[in-house]
Length: 518
Image (cartoon, rainbow, N blue to C red; front, side, top):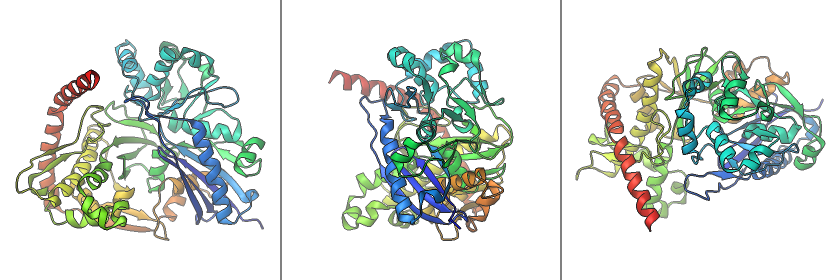
């Protein structure tokens, strides 16, 4: 009997990772293809979508070859991709312009216009999300204002997952987990709102069909088969948002569980069974039917990488391994500083901050430096500051009666036991790192495997499948004493972060003025 396998494709900000899994959830092979973003202007962040498709084609061929399987043994394909990305395409799925991704913040004036409209509050309540430059809605308005020939000539407006799905199947869809990027998406009723779309200036004829993430939306076309080396006819599901499937793959399968991401970008996702409208946070569907994700996104996770590059040159020169993974040495050093980093607090806003501040101009700050401050204090303060940034969002969620039953950690930061313990102490709850039986992490690929295998009938339940594939759990128990200490320090962190917002804006204004003059 032919082996039944699942192909998963994760299209990220800087690379695409593709994997092949056996029907029992065993990882057979994976491959990664990197690519670079284009930043032609300071606030722009775009990429040629064809680079994504080329990365998909290359990695698909690699994993099929490495796994030693035949294309006809693949039972289904699942795709996830980055959020808040606008791709106008023609009827042949050719991009008409570079994709504006989630990091793109060029639509400042358009966001201000949207916020000035009498219907602005309705936009927020309808989609359960704030109006911000990062979302797709302001990007659509920007395209209409600055590239009207592309806006008018587009056959469909797609997001990143929908673009790859369309390339595979020829079908134009947008799954529920990606649709929240449009403020005319009625998140309660799972439909486009024609009146709101008209107010914004978008014809629904240009919008793809909405569908749940696990729907089989089509099969691999002959053209896609030729591009990827697969065979035509393989079922392809709608796919989903990367952050949501990442939460699933980390073990968030029921309401009350929370996935805390720690990496270049951090944040959390809390599973709920009801819609919560909180403009300071992010809200989307979960891939598990009947559940939603109340999410937070922070940008401080790259602070340790900055510290390594600018202040860790001695260590990285000695050991290339440390350059690739600074957590080992930095964790050892941070452990030499006590909780509270001897009175040093770090605001991890090295590239602005998303939730709950939504500030492009906020910047990193060491608060409390003295002659007695050590390198260990600085490292520990960075780790604590990133935890405080997440905890800041948890406090906002708590205002809506949102409670967390279990904190599940994921991402590169889980390699640091010191950092995991800091998070347990800051949150005041056990911090759990779930792993596969082979010791590998869960995450996007595992979540995609579970939802795709369910869609094609290989497994009965998405949540049970994920839980069965994450049998190993390392638990970091919080210290009541340290939690009490961090509670006091967090009040200082929060106060400083808010007080500096006007100063951040003034600093940005001055910097831009003199950069322009020079």
